[in-house]
Image (cartoon, rainbow, N blue to C red; front, side, top):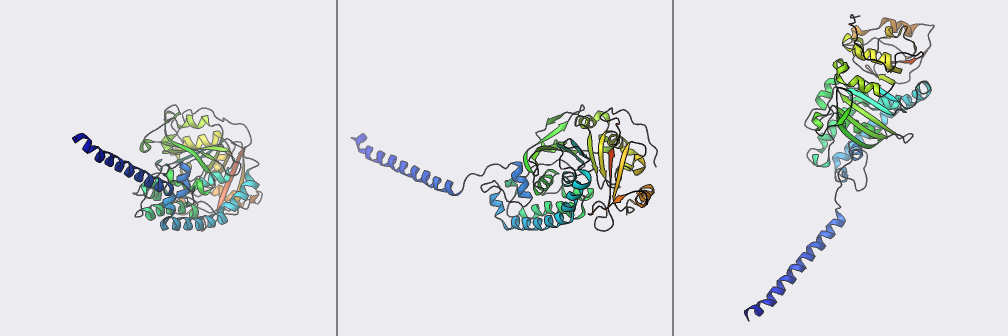
Amino acid sequence: MTVFAHKPALRCSVVTALIAALMIAAGCGRRDKTVAPIPPPSYNDTARFLAGLPGEPNGPYRRLEREAAWKDHAARLDRSWTRFQKAFLAPARAFEAKELSGDVPAGGFVFYPFSGPDIVYPLTFFPRGDTYVLVGLEPAGEQPIPSDYSRDNLASALRTWRVAAGSLLYRSFFITDEMEHQLRGKDAEGALPLILLLMARTGNRILGARHARLDARGWLSSEKDPKRAQVLEIVFRRPRDGRIARLYYFSRDLARGMNPDSGFPQFLERQGAARTFVKSGSYLLHSPRFRRLRRYVLENSVVLLQDDTGIPFRMFDERGWQVRLYGDYSPPGDPFRHRVQDDLAAAFDDPERIVKRLGFSLGYGAGRRTSSLLFAVRNRPGPLLGHMAPVPPEPQP
């Protein structure tokens, strides 16, 4: 009797539990329809978010894109980018099409020492490259993810990247001391986010990325810890022709980084003949400390585009180069006044030499004094992709 007396109560509790479970499940189902699970961000998701460009409708940053701070960030970057396109990108692309494209072999390897995170300029002047190698002192850095941001820190974090990008957009170059502060703060760490931002703004789609390290033979291997990574490798699709290209960013000091036992010269040699670009390079290629790098550039480049901070003009004598000059040379200001090149100034003033109009401002003094570029094309075979033999000491000029 006792057992039977408890059965209705038992059935009632079971039914109640089942109903409650169904109600909970139904409630969860209703919530799932309105708040879908947020997928992890791809590198392209992050690039567009940082660049102030809308992501996919159900992308991982959609909640943050609704915030007033992100909308303000996007509007400010839109204005800066529009100005940059008008002042630089449009005339620079016209310059590339008219003056460079006929002499720069399609595809291949573009080398940009002292670049920092600047991917915009090599993509503009060498838009048909297959591989881009940038070198700067800034650490590689990590990919931000949505959980890094809250309503409290979003505005300041986005401002960090906007200010860092503004250095390039308004002055055409990054300042090393500023990068040290901007890319090592509480809201920012390393070059990767800024590179992603600039690649998204130039219309590229990021297909993947990895952190890597370089061994003494010049081979890369993946590095799980971003803080220990020496190299970033980014695969992307170019907007103009849809071709897939690859970017390598090396965090290293090129005064020591060109030593034969560092692995970096071997890595460069595997990329083939270089299309080299130098801008706002602190005149480091004028210094004996960088003679290995200078020798590599002169012996392994098929073309070289540079401002006056690159290879000294006198070093192109009898080296088998056809040199073309653009713009107007102006002596460097502080702290580089001692790097004035009288022979380069004389070449610009030579009535027998054709000096063509540049049409835009870049490099040190951009917007304040005249700008110039030197474009050198190798016109005879040289020791391309050869040895990295010991380099003899060179006296200070």
